[in-house]
Length: 459
Image (tube, rainbow, N blue to C red):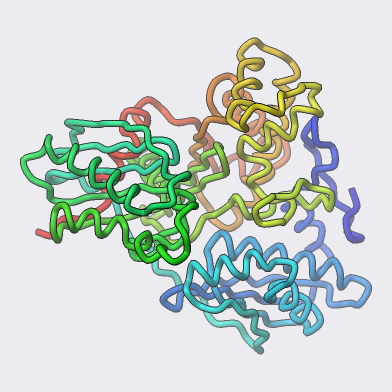
């Protein structure tokens, strides 16, 4: 395969997507002949800094390839760790091109505005002589079992709450709600308070409350969350501190913690496995990801791998939200199953919702339909290549694969094919990581029960 003059060799290709070019393989081929230093740093809240030092070619004939390579790295760092300011040290032509791409109204205008909103700071790309040094601020959180706790898990279609006493779940409840189609933040507030009070009825007292919710949270504040999609901007102030207000109004000044649901999934995985260094990937409506590092800490990184590129094919599928191509959401969610179905010879009724289309393919898979099997084999190949790319940034040991796409025979096939590709094409990485489906202990633990363990109770 040739892309931008870079010859890429790939051993394993998805059977239903022969044009797929794993970004990690493109990067390896690119770097084989790149010798000119180029450094990137991305700044996020609290002066934290993600630094990546690499090389480019620095020649006019390779300018397009250099710009593409650096832009994909910047994109990856932004969505993996987050940030509002990008520092570049190196070739001026490449720096100028990246600044234009990420400018207001530029090619990656979506990224510009998203990061500016999340970090409440104008987004900018700055060329410097030398990038700042690495700075991280991970914190140990969760795994606390003492006292009387409430764990609340806010999902898009249901909300779950657990009451936990000294690590034992004494009550759990799941209630259907409709947060994504309600524009009144008071609807969300009332639902949260109702769940908290329901759990509190089964406790002698409430010592701490932990919340697991889809979205991006900084200092327990909601910076961006699909649950509040319909809430108008002028009422956003009610959403930003909604969990804090609900907990304080109901229980007073108790310890609390609000964490992205992906990180809570990774924490639950760590608790069930008994080891840290866990990357959790949930393949459902989107690709939701969480990470607990080797020290057992949550990093505060965005971990929004749905927007991280994995495919260098210039004709890769477009993500409707960001407008970018080749990003994880189209490879590790129900969108992937749907996009591969026509290539497998499966016609899906366009009147069906995406979730219903996934169920139709899953039904075929459960009946051992070979066409459906090709879909899941293809996703397994995607996953193996992507895990190698992710591993270069995270260095995880365990990968916990979750979500409705991973359910049933399809999930088993994805995992099996992924392991085969890793062993055959990336033996060093295969020996270092352990992809797995959740075990029974994880299922018993549950997301809301894991959320209950988030806050530490001061003694």
